[in-house]
Length: 172
Image (cartoon, rainbow, N blue to C red; front, side):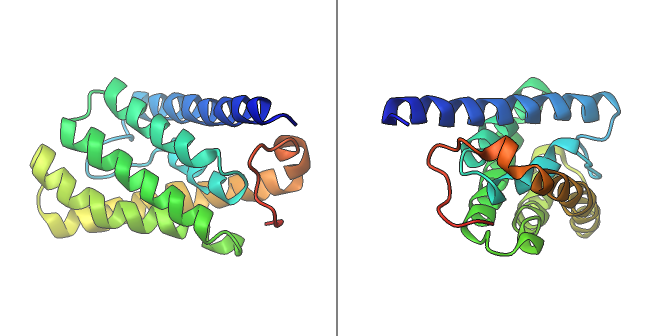
């Protein structure tokens, strides 16, 4: 594959992941579970995608950034919520040797960064309760839904990730 075609394919994959993240966040937002102290974003299940493809890292970051912008999040939430997703995605990509580890970085990144953000940006108190509720929401979104997605994609991995530009050289 030519280098320019590989770049276009990489950007296309990232854009598709970003669009899917925004769409799934909208669905959770319509159901009233995408923001606030208890957050169960279906889109957070996508945070396991860096296990399969490096294109997921920018895709998840841009998707989270756009979803937060479009759903009316506060400026600190737009910035630091997106950074939490980026940190989780980068660590999932970095430590992708074990599929059981895939949901742990986004769970930890959000569990640590989001509760103080909720206090600062929205005044949600008490902080200790936010640590509990955000972690529970992330365990549901990333741990349960994310792992279900990982197992579903693992079965058809070659079909979805066959022509990967800048793909990982080792198999997950």
